Amino acid sequence: MSPFRRGVRMPSDPSAVAAIAAVRKQWDVLFNAGRLAELAELFYTEDAHALPPDTPHIEGRDEIRKFFQAFYDSGKVEFQLDVIRIEASGDYGYVTGNYTLSVTPHGGATQRWRGETNEAFRKGPDGAWRCCADMWHHVAEI
Image (cartoon, rainbow, N blue to C red; front, side, top):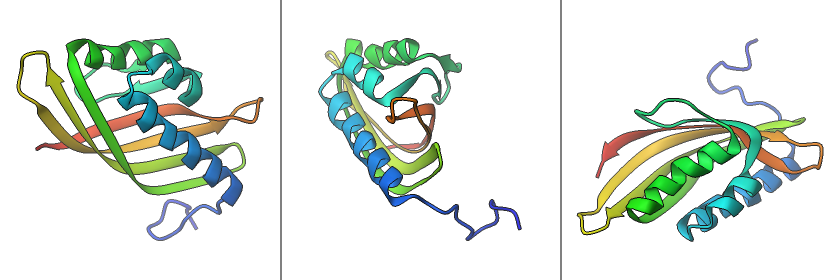
């Protein structure tokens, strides 16, 4: 039976799920505080990939940080993720969720989006869980 069939879930390690959840929660805190260097170091693997909507593929922790920095350079940013599911087994896990993002450009009107995200996590040699692939898309402008 395929593990991808509807209703079939991978067996999860509760301690790994808790560790990923703790790291995931820090993403929102650090992002909203504009602490992007700290966010990149804590959250992303050195070789992480990001696939943002309507933007070319981004490769590498520092390039992902630069991508997010552009939001802050343009104005005020607020992000919130509502986690749908976290699963983990062995050295890999994933997070799915729904997000809201608000960007208020300097002197401009606030733009708001809602969307969905899927993040793949890998446990490193140091025992830390980090995102190795981050993909999101906007469902609607709100």
